[in-house]
Amino acid sequence: MKELVKLALILMIACPLAGTIVSSCAGESDCSTAGRAMLWSSVYRLDGAAAVNDTLDSLTVTALHTDIVLLNKMKDVTRFGLPLKYTNDTTRWVFDYGEQIRDTIVIWYTNTPEFVSMDCGYEMKQVVLGLSYSTRNNRLDSIRVTNTSTNTDETKNLELYFRYH
Image (cartoon, rainbow, N blue to C red; front, top):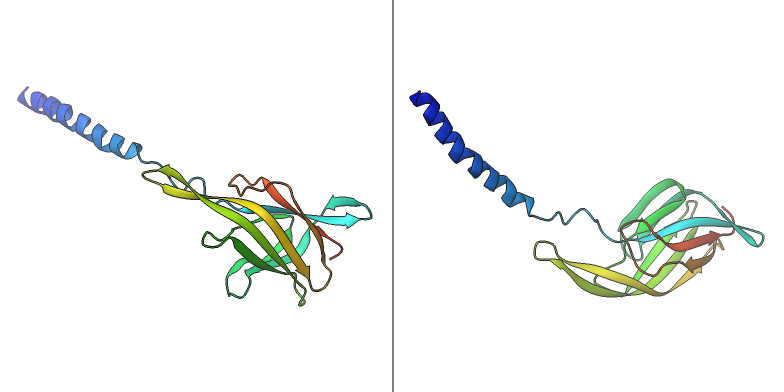
């Protein structure tokens, strides 16, 4: 009987203690669930006056004048996301389609830090103000901005129109 009483006392002390330890971790927020906000792009081909969904055979995207590779020989590209710099208000990308065919895209935007929580700190809200592009081989025809705010839910921001590939 004494053993049963000891066991009951141990359980009465251990269960609330274990519950306190588990619940203290439950209040922590998972700051990594949303991910980094990106600028999401979709690929289109101009077919006369109409635009149709298209696929690029291969795409490598690097940051201009750096060795930073954002996409590395991605195959069958229909849509993709690219980050904007937090430390500048301009990001420059080089799109390489292979065989020395490249386009350069420049994006201007605002960076606005927004407080999330004490645990997570701040996240950066970015809004596109404008863009320009230069085409060395006349591959990229035009770019249309459909949504100016970067996002984590893959909402399309840019429509990239290509003449051929």
